[in-house]
Length: 301
Image (tube, rainbow, N blue to C red; front, side, top):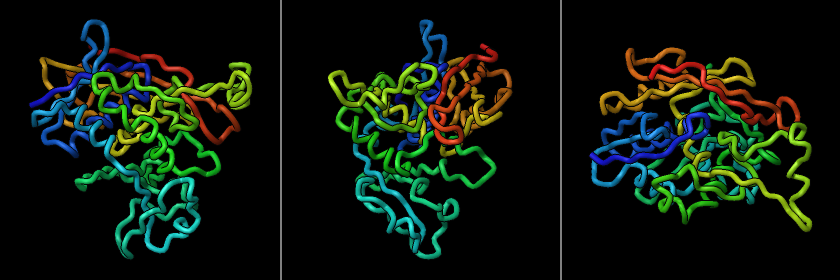
């Protein structure tokens, strides 16, 4: 078994979701992937993930991201294929007629599913933004000019493609100027009316401003929404939880999925912490949302 330890800020929802994404990806790429949040590591929290093999799981996941191409997916005959803009990357791949699709054909390309695919045929689907079940979509972004999630994902990977594996010991610290994101990592976001100015109005001139984002967090957090979601109370209030580290034991992905949106621990007696996050409207109400405040609710260490 190989093991990776990743620093994580539990008060950053994007980083917590990214940890779930790291585990989900490890479970696709490796055997027997398990994990735990360890908040007794010298006063700082870490996400510990283990899996079969000699390569550390975090390195394997980041290697996959480094070599992955992004493919948008559309049902056969979808009008979204013809309305796809060249600036968004390659046109969506059309499914064979009759092939199952995760939800109805979207009314625009914005929420077409995205596939991360490497040269060995490994694939990981991201489609939470179009979820047609009763689960919350956790779609905080509103694409500029209708930009699809697949295009945002492609841009995020392009920003850090040559740097990802070098950052395997602290991937959530890897930053880059980023014009649009999924708004999972709140270190990039702002509310113009609260801050007193809008960086968007200062993109050029003698002292241009560009917002710095954390693409690896955004990518992995989107992957983390594959089978788990935080618990929504209102459009502007969500709750999320994490399972800890007990007697050096790790838990399978299913338990961390259950914990993320749980009010009580899905594993009785296991260390468990709950958090609440509030969001606001950075622009027009009803469009994009961004995280503005996070506090811890309870701790069972």
